Length: 118
Image (cartoon, rainbow, N blue to C red; front, side, top):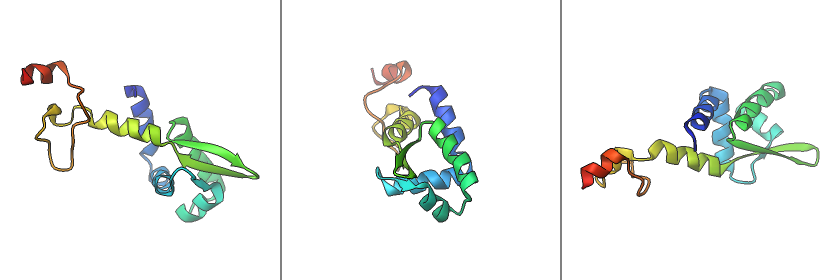
């Protein structure tokens, strides 16, 4: 994931309602929810929900599909995983003794880390 994509994704999540919508869709899984269900669970009027889901979709965080007359939204888990990997890459300098709750994201090391372990 490119840093510009990360900035757009984090910007889209940096709003109370969009974050609530996104977390709800993550909890729901790949089947997602209809726009009406999201609006009622988050407490948004349809026009506000449309505004917020468009921002999340532009950032690539959610997908939208038509199911009959309804729009269904779902979290794009590959984008979420890419965002998390980007944020945790080289966590704790790539050291095996990582901070509690943190784990290095694999063998990707920076030049500085490579020199340290040599």
